[in-house]
Amino acid sequence: MEVVWTAHPARRRPQDVFLVGAVVLVSMWAVLVTLGSAFLAALAAVILVVAVAPFLFPTRYRLDDDGVEERRLWTRKRRSWRDLRRLQVGPGAALVSPFARPSFLDRHRGVLLYLDGADRDRVVATLRARVGRDAVAEAGAGEAAP
Image (cartoon, rainbow, N blue to C red; front, side, top):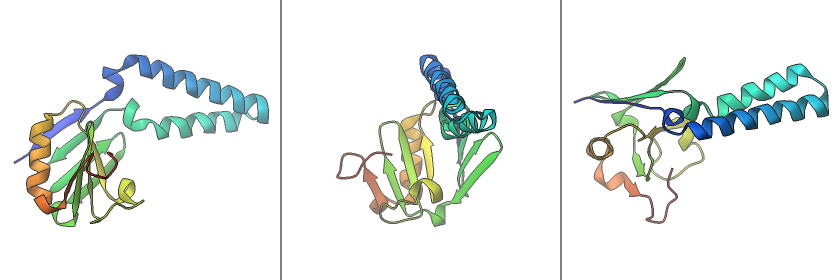
């Protein structure tokens, strides 16, 4: 069993790419004018681009017999099925987490799977089968969606 897909929200929403570019440029200008440092302006741009990397750059996801894998640019995050204790499904994404209850570390220790470009039903069914029915929380059932 293997499910593979690539999520690239920027390709599907080009108008938002323009907005991101405008925010980065205005932020760079504001830092340059207020602090007078080209280095800090460039650093601000880098920080903003890294912050919106899941939107700007394609992310490849793979669900296989060993676990969940996320690849974006030069980074790779992998979690094995046995380490995952909770699945939270929202309208546009699914969060698989090693924590049984919601934690502020979910976004760092877990994997947030954007369902953009995926066969949503197949991905969610695979996640539910692997993570476990009793660990699944649907968005809208008292918890916020990822």
